Structures are given as C-alpha cells and as structure tokens.
Image (cartoon, rainbow, N blue to C red; front, side, top):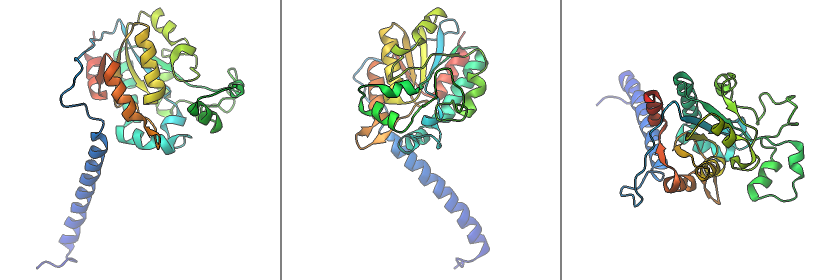
Length: 265
C-alpha cells in the first residue's frame, strides 16, 4: 500500500484537492444560481429584440464604487450577489464591446448632495442610503473629494465612461430616470432600443426598465450585468429577475449581449 506520505501521493493529492476544491466551489455557485434559472415551461409568450447600431444604446445604471467595490458602503449586502453573477466583469465587457463596435453608451448615475439630506420624508432604503453616506458628494459643482469616493465610477470603467463620447446624464435621486435627463438624451440621439445593465437589480435597474418601457422604448435586460442586496427582507436579485421575466422585451446574458452587439449593423 502506498504511504500517505509518499511524495507522489502528496503531489497528486494536492492536485486532486485543488481540483475538488474548484469543483466544490463551482458546484456551490451553480447551486446558488439555480434558484434564478428560468422556468422549464414558461407560461408567458416569448419575446425578442433585434438591435442595430442606428437605433440601440447601452444604458448602465449606477456603475459606482458604493455598489460594486469591496470598498463601497453596500458591499456587505450586495457583495455576494455581485460576486456570484460576475457583475463587475460583465459590465466591463458590455462597455468594452459597445465602445469597440460603435454602440452609444449612456450612464445614469446616483449622487446625493448635502441639500438632499434635508428631505422631510424618505422610504426605508432612502433613509438607509442617507444614513450611511451612500453616493454622497459635497455639491453639484464641487469635485473636491469626489475622485475615488463611493460616488465615483469604478476605476476600471473610467476610460470608457470618461472618453468624451459616453453620455453621463444628470443624477437620478431615488430609483428611476424620471428625475434626470436620460429619456431626453436617448430621444435626442434617435435611440429606440435599450440594452440595460447596472446596479442594483431590484431598485434602480428595475425602475429604469419600467420607466423606459412606459416611455415607449424596447428594453433588453442583461441578467448577469446586475446584482442586488440579500437582506432578511428578501433576495433583491430574485425579486428582480422575476419581474424582468414579466415585463422586459428580452433577457440576455452578457455573452449573448456581446455576440449580438458585435453582429449589429
């Protein structure tokens, strides 16, 4: 019988442990994501969106440090979902592909100024966001302290977002784009179809989806280019993906979106 201390066993044992470790990790991730899988027999009719470079744009909500970085104030509740879905990398792929293929990019950010902390009433999450200083800036015309703050864009996205071509809208203040100029900017550029991703799934991303639909746009949600908080009140991503299935004109993965953007004419 080969000794457990035999050098070959130790080498192969370490390799086997590494493989098993990776396998167990992959299995755990698959199990975690299984609850988000589409139903085997959907009840709703299938819909689809055909995109073109002339009438389609990428819209990303809140690609900011407070949502997407371990340094952000919400990482403790969104980090698990962001990691499971590969959200940071997937948003990056959408930005890179859109830039390479000439697809217009719009970013709808979330910023809070000192005056916003004077609101007389707030919903639960508004109250929480203000309490933890989420997306805080010193003022609409003040950039002191902004760079690298939780309100700033993720560093890996800055080359694409700050290239002088991306449309960065005025900030939305709660969840949807009703309080900013996103719809105006889209219409002024002849956009009719939107590929939507960003943070967070059941809040700003979902609110943007609903308003854009109400405004007459066709909207595709990129299901793994978003994520959400997991709280005792519920799994935000599970709530979002359910609603996305109900109302979005189409649901794509990042890989599907990249392929379709590259094929667009």
